[in-house]
Image: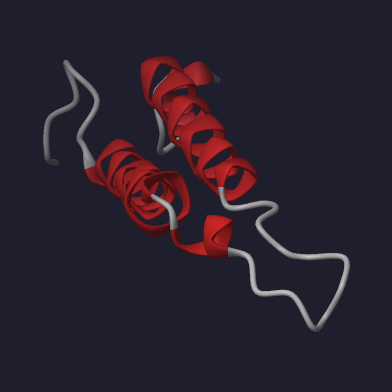
Length: 78
């Protein structure tokens, strides 16, 4: 029964790690706004929101794609 799944248990764990990375990247993008529309806040353009969080999101997407596309060990083509 376990052999019918297209993603191995290790692949599922890797997918979850990628999803956690993506969610943490989106969380890092939060904030930076201003309560007063007449006041400009430079915090919107800091390193965390402009570089670190998009890198985490893209890294999470790449990890999920690799986990889905990788072949489980021991599986052979028929």
